[in-house]
Length: 393
Ligand code: TRP
Image 1 (spheres, rainbow, N blue to C red):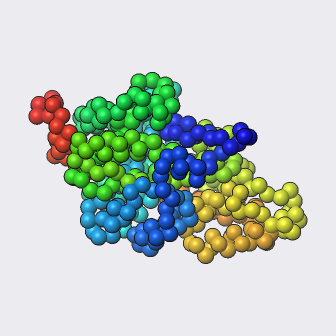
Image 2: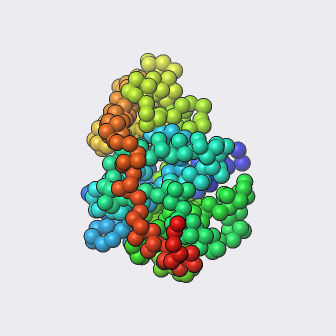
Image 3: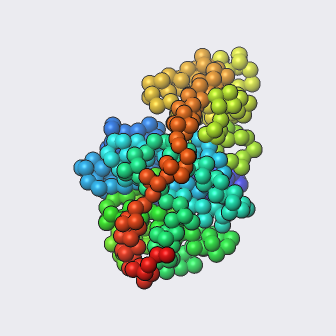
């Protein structure tokens, strides 16, 4: 078998050419059906229609609750290992759409501990990234009344007792089989922390459908968490998941990563930088000459500029179809397509940066999004942690 046919996807390694269908068999998740796609609030969402979110676990109970006005929540988080790029922010804008449409509660955990275990960075560096990433997440524009942000090390009074309870439910053999041998005991323990994130809305507010919209590499965490919930030692339902493909990196249709050779497009890039990165680095799989392109046409499925527009940055279905058709028949050139992608991505980032610039200092903005004392106490009491009831200081 050629090396190309093998690939690895875990939260800590994405390697080789990912076959998204094979992965579903490996992971045991289900493809989204046309019926499910049609049920998304507000007449669907481009990320769902265009198959970026392509698979699910227990999506239907979430959609039922969301459409019937019953309690439902969304959890999507961030590992603060560096500046955020456009691929990182997509699930947050998706969560915002659900909040706007159906009033979903949105929980946003920040796994600073995880990134300390997984990356060679000091705690001080990670804490700088945490602060910068939080500004980007706040710039998405969540409703503070319906949004909770939790930072693992800063909210340890609630995260630790819950993670300790859940860690007792997971064997080392399960962790090894799910993630490969973890590099250190921090990463062995971390699945219990992410399980805490995914169960937190239910531990605060009682059992209800939860959806975790994430890139498919995070599914192992979802599985471990669902196994914990399935033991029914705690009064929680298994969280559901909505799994996405990776946004393409500039150097080809694979995953955009901060550590690729080609640069990633950062949320802080201005229009000129975006245009420069796309024109210099975006892979087009294109023809060698304009004449050849005009004659034979291009392949949008391989063209990163097109894929960026398709995946997220051109929400208008007619327009994106037209671009694909013109590129295929050769009338639209690769340079023109790049131009278009640079304009759309640049405009999106400008709006994002404007909202980020309008924020006050983090110390003033963040408190509205933190768990209240009552919420913390409720969550702790639901795992019956022995430390509860003691004075805190
Ligand atoms: N583990 C995720 C990452 O490395 C970040 C994360 C933490 C997360 N908690 C989460 C993502 C909960 C989704 C849901 O990027």
